[in-house]
Image (cartoon, rainbow, N blue to C red):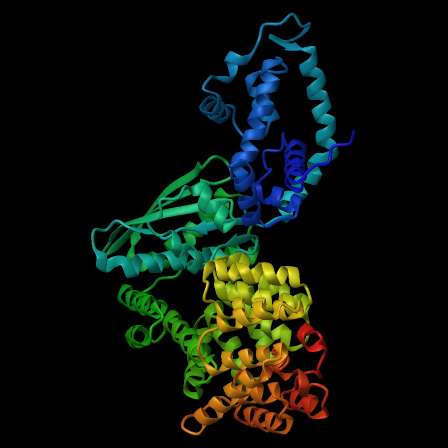
Length: 619
């Protein structure tokens, strides 16, 4: 009688088969297993924890040890041969793990037997062992190159956890945090290494989680931990590398002690050492970049780090304080590029909003160009210019070039990838758009913004399953995330689940932009009076304060006031108000897209004519 396996049983069987197929491959990793079973690393971790109580790394080790136990009990081979046969890199480490798991040594399981032996030199080897070795040689020749190339095709990954301040001075926190960010930046220059963003690793500051659990949450194979022991005229830094795929085995531990003027060389030296320890191949350009010697004035660098520390706090007051410190760094050394790059990115981020700031973008442009002139490898400066060209200048060719330059100088620049995705959206290239958006969430797995942006792009690509997954992922990180709720509301409208759609739209943040989307939802669900009330409230508000004409156009279009909507949209184009370039994004404008004036709007912005890739507009 045929046995019908449940979905979970089929999944576990698939996982088991993949591990068995790779049982003797010491390079087999969690990333390869996730790739083979068609899941992300974090999804694989959650599913295995739910079904087995073990992480992916623990489950691989469990299967290896079970096979080792079988081989030892049947005297198939020696302990050392068994260790290599089940994929352990060293017999001594195999002995340690085996004993911890079974509470007995591997040798104690071997039975006396009367098997025929062959004597080769001074060593007695069983016929079964010889046959198995010959078999493995044949299989190895057939498959070795495949596994080698397969593993090399999957980028290695690392997370640098927040550096610990052991200087005894809390006032040094800003400096230690700056070292953490700088190490991530240096490692990010290596294209064959995926480096988790600073924002996604900060959650593990003072965490008591196991390294394997942190690695699985972040989807990486290696964890770097560090501490700063002293900061004065010199700096002393210790870095530990842990292999999260190998029972938290320590890969290396190194100490660095240099004059503070050599702090940049310490950071690049750490990146080179880590690349060597995890067997990552650098291009000639990457190697030359990391090996180039750079001195820095300690007081200038401290002012720069203080400035970035305050910018990262994200409040209006801390922004002003951060900018003051960055200006101090420039005043102290006008030839230092880092502070210019920090100012550029700070102003560019401030200027990119629903009400743009002309002065902020102008200041960002000046600072970014200065930073690039001083050091053409600073990716933050290119990122700032890219944001300006995309959201303010509408210089599409320069936006593409500066995004490309930013990513070329730091392939792990999550911000550049996330916004480059929206550049490609403007030109209806959803495949490339989604590719960059996916890269941003791989680098910054705990960014609710990037997860929700990916959800929106999948929605526009009509892949509602992925859209829902990433929308929920965004809400798992932050339940109040606006776009996470919005995309789930749109999906509910697609499925004609109207009460659920309204519920999601009511969870949107305050603000006229979000109320315009709520008005669209009301119209789609048949609640016309509620949509009209939102419009009247907004009209009244616009009489006493400035309201973004895009938002007024969205509400007018919801209610079919086409002429008025086009009037507001033309005004938005004249004033270059964000987000006018993204009129293809919102389903609020669907009633306008059949009108010839709509393509005329796009033409004014040097954008291609409308392509019906927004699913909501097809209803």
